[in-house]
Image 1 (cartoon, rainbow, N blue to C red):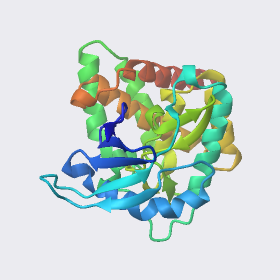
Image 2 (cartoon, rainbow, N blue to C red):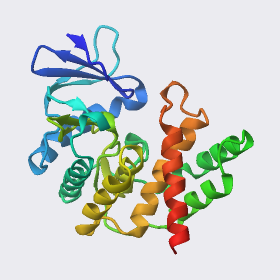
Image 3 (cartoon, rainbow, N blue to C red):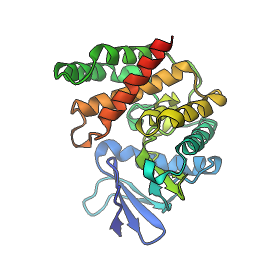
Length: 277
């Protein structure tokens, strides 16, 4: 058994032999994710166009480790990064196809967004106070244009969602997307998944995609009626929140080193749309 290089924050991941991984929650707050994945990944997997983790066994607390844990089938591939992706627009379109298929899965009995998903899929108002504190802190240091950041956030808050709840992944980040031969080959880590507002899954548009690939992603998601202007605004709000709290230091050691670039992308796109209107 050997540690996986990108082992994650919510869980610690180890490779077991050639065909399996061991996934252990890293703290009590992440413990419910193991049972959720064990229950729902077997339901989701046959309905999705790309491989996702398949639970093979359940581990019980023992030897001083206090949480239930999971043994999954190993999935070959490398974590997504621009230099590993052959065609970023094609990658974006493939990812949109995966998310569209996920949203189409029957939600009956599915876990409604809440604490287990760290409120991904819930209204953005959950993080309103935290976001405004981050804007104030960063503006006080002269790091961000506070008025524009506030405008992006309030636009997202006002873009209310009244659609039926659908499945969302909850953490569509480059580290949870695998590539092989330059193409998207698998999606992993469903710990933040659930049923609710899927706009949180759009954050990849600003954290990995840009320009042509971001537009390809938006068009592909919009084609199936899964993204309208309000949903895009909420997705941008999720990206803004994460970048702000990372830059403000609210995440401690989990801060995203690319947060400044994400924030710039979010604010620039918003300003371009405002001028175009």
